[in-house]
Image 1 (spheres, one colour):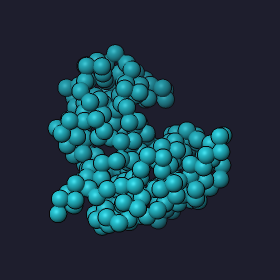
Image 2: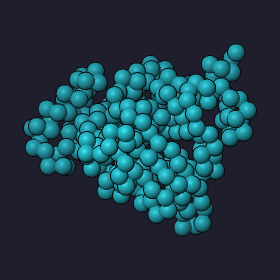
Image 3: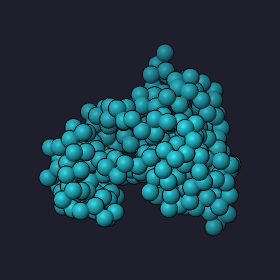
Length: 248
């Protein structure tokens, strides 16, 4: 799927009336609709059980959209389209880091696609350099800090040149320095990006818009910071004001 061949006005990603129920009957998504603009950074927020994880699995091609539709640059996207076009970074970066050295992990996806190993390694090293993480290239992943692991996982996704990046809780369990480094890296990216988070202050630092999920449906959608200043709306949907606003 090539965005250049689609209409220029088409959104990188659109979710249209997406429903999903698990085999036990639990309805996880109930008519979710939203779109992502070119180079936009969108926060997907909501309390536990709101449908965020199920939605991410759909966006990454892990679950097929049986009722509703997902589109990439104006065209209907199946699971294989989404797996090729969407780069997903898990909440636990250890799930994506398993090679002897970081550079091997970053190059792994390229090699799996048939890129010669030497070329893949050069691209991996260049991506680590771009993220100011070249010093990690020959380090074993299990010796990295939490923030370093997030950067390594991000490099492994970016080197694949995905059309859309999706991140699950990118700053969870990070110390303040690592959290700031990840935030700065995400802010510098020039690519459509969706992140899920319970850290609304981090979302304000990275994103320009948010979609609030509750009970599997879109409870609210709007620009930031405006949406996160609405205390009544947030509390009604199981969230609290960001710290920067609760102190005023």
